[in-house]
Amino acid sequence: MTSLTFLGTGGGRFATIYQVRATGGIYINDGGRLHLDPGPSALAGMRSLDLDPALTDCVMVSHCHPDHYGDAEMLIEGMTRGGHRHSGTLVAPRSVLEGGGRFSQAISTYHQSLPREVIEVAPGDRFQAAGMTVEATPAVHSDPDGVGFRFDTRAGMISYVGDSEIDERLFRVHRGARVLIINLTCTTRTKIPMHMYTETAAALISDIGPEAAVLTHFGIGVFEDGVEEQARYIEKESGVRTIAAEDLMTIEVGREIVSRPAGPPPRR
Ligand SMILES: [Zn+2]
Image (cartoon, rainbow, N blue to C red; front, side, top):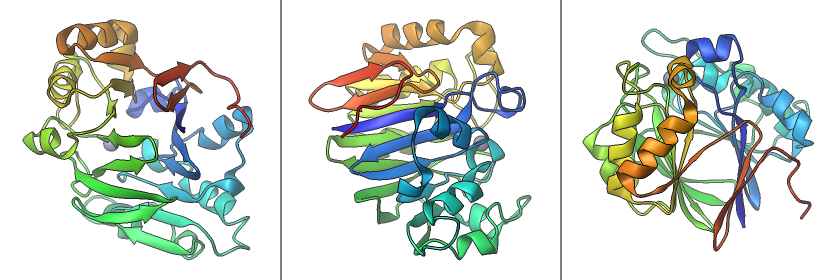
């Protein structure tokens, strides 16, 4: 059984500033525990679900925007027990680790010195993280170093497209995913460049044909037009079961894919 816990389902500037929903990223438990894109409120979300940051094996950041890295340094401190244990893995692209273009380094040199391993990733790279084989996938976003990820888990392939506008490469690299996670920052009406919106999300989901698509990282425009409405539209267009994630929801991926509303994960 592999589980995906949504420590936040908001994203984009204003949904994050006003915490319309939490923005703490996705916590993947595949035996190893990986915290993906821990934006502001990741720590608060872990606290409310009784998840211990000291048990995290990997902190992973897809790109250099604060709704994706806001709590990353504190989580690295958690993973390394306050910096006293040289352990765990940090995965991020160059912009996050070194800066570049309009971005300065998002994780300090000190915090990069704490984990046992730091892996700088670019699209196409394959590496091990929290016991999984992971591939960094391309993204077209306002951080040109931004990536998505596909995770080879015990329950099969789980893909995270990351922040990206639609691009022909996405149709290829995410093929075979059982679960396809889409950051739906805007709707077709409120679309902004460099982001996925309802229509393009439906096209990608329809073509990949996963067992389930999961929408998260909702921006203000999605709340205006209705989160559930976007999910129902995509499900109708694609014929793929489409789940609009909610804060602190867990999706269990076993033989079946089951979503559970907010609540502590079962003890294993
Ligand atoms: Zn972004």
